[in-house]
Image: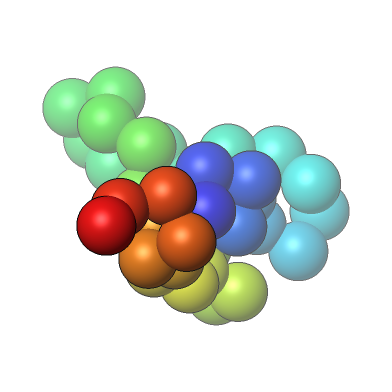
Length: 36
């Protein structure tokens, strides 16, 4: 899901404080197969 935080140009999108924002293709991680 971290790679889905990239923008359409393949670069991270930052806010004015330098935090990486969720890109337009963001999806939540699916950890169900690792947790029992």
